Image (cartoon, rainbow, N blue to C red; front, side, top):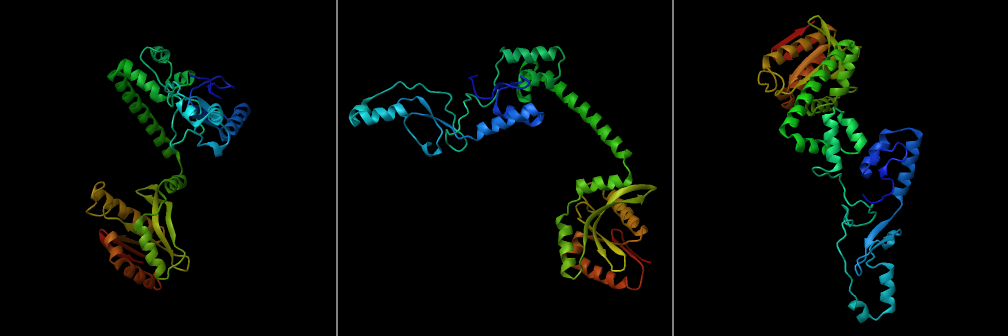
Length: 344
């Protein structure tokens, strides 16, 4: 590899750095003072304008530092020749111009800010130094990450070499290791989840699934246009179901005005009800009913509407009636599947 600023080995820790992308990642993950000073110097160098261009006449490379000259076609020497010779004599001049692999076009179609790299990726060939070093490390049981850091290569290079050396045997080993590690990580995640309090579980569910879907957005818009204000969207909390506290979401909460609230649950029929295509329909129906009754048991009024009821306007009409009826009762429970309603 040609001598290029900042590449080769890290000035601080001597780790091999073959591309500017690997340099960037290296400096991002090392936050000590020495590496951060190197990062500042690299950024300052990178922000300076420089371009390496090829002379259209003689084929030699020349460097410019003025962006206004980025479309120059001739080097300084050929500019001098052109000025000192007649046009016919200048046009008659010929030069041998062998192809230069360093002339790499950028995505913007310009050679400006060429960084001096002849190759944009780390290459390898069967039997070369990198190939032998990877094979030797793997046969000695050296970890993948340690080999990558020592040789300054990417995982794609590492896997390409191992795939060439061991073929399908290596692919099977990778698959088995991923399955084993995945299973271990899943067990760890389950243990961590079980160790959380009900409130922590509800907060976790809120962070992961706290977004508002299109159906909930539509019905909340209908409620606002009908004059209901201060809606609470996608509120997670712990509910007692089958003797355990589990996190459940209230799609919309609407204040009655005297401290009471109505929980509105909006059910897309691809996920809820008898025609659900995701999961077992009866299990979803039983689970939805248990959730609604758990909210009801905590003192909320609960109304569960299907997607069809929301779209055809029936849900809004029913909700308006519920709000009127709550003036003379404590709370109301209504479910669309199974169809049932209670008034307390």
